[in-house]
Amino acid sequence: MRPASSKAVLMGWAARLFSFSGTIGRGSYVGIALVCVLIKHGMDLSLAALVFHRDWSPLSYLMPLGVPLPVTGIPADARVFVVTMLATSLPFAWIGTAITVKRFRAIGWPEWMVVLFFVPVANVASFAVAAAWPEHSQLERSSSNRWLGRIVPVDRLGAAVFALVATTILGVAAVALGTRVMGSYGWGLFAAIPFSQGALAAILAGVHRHRSLPESLLVALLSVALTCVALLAVALEGAICIAMATPIALVFALIGGLFGHVCQDRTNRPRANPATLLVCALVAPLIMGAEAIVPRETPTYMVRSSIDVNAPPMVVWRNVVRFPDLPPPTELPFRIGIAYPIRARIVGSGVGAVRYCEFSTGNFVEPITDWEPGRRLAFRVARSAEPMRELTPYGTLDTPHLHGYMVSKHGEFVLEPLPGGRTRLIGITWYQHHLWPAAYWAVYSDAIVHEIHMRVLQQIKRLSERRPVAAPRGNRAGRLRGTSGRQVRRLEPK
Image 1 (cartoon, helix red, strand yellow):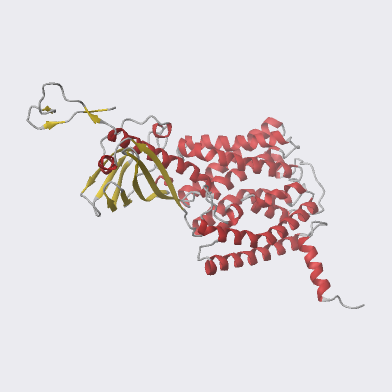
Image 2 (cartoon, rainbow, N blue to C red):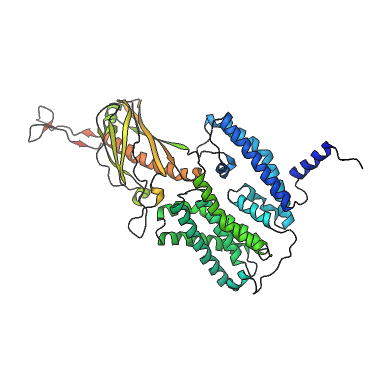
């Protein structure tokens, strides 16, 4: 019998890697996955560092498609980088999808669950569980001699209550670990914890008997909802942060609930049950720990707002440099605690002067870097105020994300002359935030910065469009005089 040719061996391996047919054992599944991850990460690291001079880390794969995609579109200088990274990802994505389908088929999981391969956090958890899951064990119903069956109530309501209480305690403890110990406000906190809670809640609720999909998803959502209430009650987080994080948390709770629902009928296999619970419990702390250790490139965001003013540029300029107290805010974000500007003053004149913009939470100190009267005022931000005052039943709450997690870098006002003696006033801010997923939180931060811009721009517009009151007849000087003899000009709105 002739030995197989090299070509036949290569063709066999290619079919094993790229084919979606058949099944795959635990050893091959883990081995192929680990080799592909190492090769892919080495390629990405080399391309990013040597060709595009960008930072890259294992946490980069938690971003959609493995590349940072800004909300407002991909900048021109990053398009080649993005296209290159996506192109090199395609063969690895094919292999990963193929072996995942074959592994799910081998352990009896629905093949449509391969979509979890493309979901951050869920892909890590599903890989670990699928790797540990036995291929040929027969499904067993829980009995009184199994430890989990002994502590989870048999009735539907009792099992659901047990699942909610256990996962809420786990969620609060994980949030405390991530925020207070690791200082991590990222994928681990906002995605991995709700995913873990949703999966564990669905699994625990179905220990004794299979629950319907709506029941599994409901208990997963309630678990995260109760955790939000508990975080507010024990003063770990405020209402504003919880409200902003809730949408993404509920999405990952649903994904986790779906994952746990598929595991329900199989959690009583002798070896699968501990592995499933362990993976779901550890995925969040492991991701938070990685985020705390591995450095990440923080994106810089730019927000640009504008308003047209019925006044010439030099009149507008005087109110850009300094303006008196703004009226009390009427916008909902500012009324519930988001920091808002109150007044601005400047010490000195020209480049090197310092502008002080007082916010409801403190002062921004802004040394002037560009001074062009009637055209442009630019400044860097030497000190920032806290971004908000958290809503809490305990009066004040000092959470870690209030310090250094959203930082203004620099800003500028641009004055563009318009026909008819009018001016287009533009406010621009460059800032960074250290919350992840970055694109998700940029939706909130961009909107907040824009509201701050508009509050200031509208005040400048009001001041600039005021005009002196006409002098009364008989006043030959054409102006009013105060009792001190100094000229007094009364201003009123148009």
